[in-house]
Length: 233
Image (cartoon, rainbow, N blue to C red):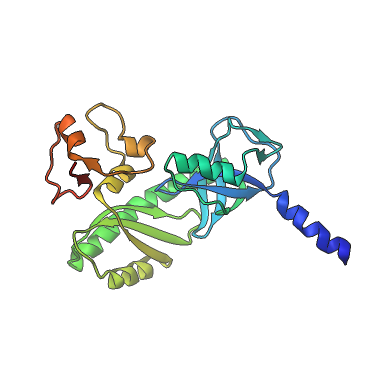
């Protein structure tokens, strides 16, 4: 009995972790895994999160992995992302199920087509119910556990009947998430005047308020009362 109880902490200590970015909002987290080889090329990963089965991207494949174990400790990772002002949880967000297969990628493309139809359906229901909300995007979780709709609105919206109608239509769990204009840009990936995809889509994960001085430099002076993301000096 003594040997069995002494062995348990050792197994917990030797758990391996992998960095994965997943979801429409590009959530970054650590996931437990049992792989011994970490590919050096861009790699898709199937993970299990609290939302269900999801398809994500391996992060840090060129970083120091050894026999599948990321060398940096959770404290070091937390400090690194804290300095970069990126939210990072010390606790694992789930488990790695497998490296994505060609069938997984094909299923993802299929779900993307279905998601476009789900967005149009939600827009139609919203119009029929005369709800003051703009449907921006949707995310159909890879495992089919739920559909998340992202919307914008200037007021609070009672969308309980809409959720019931969508749940009846698709026979799965429905979530509605209210977002702002900059999150809309992140989701839709607009192209800016520089010709590049907007920064918040490409690499900027923390959306800080833009002050009036910065807006003037870009010749985009705006009324702070209408655009809360713009702060006065």
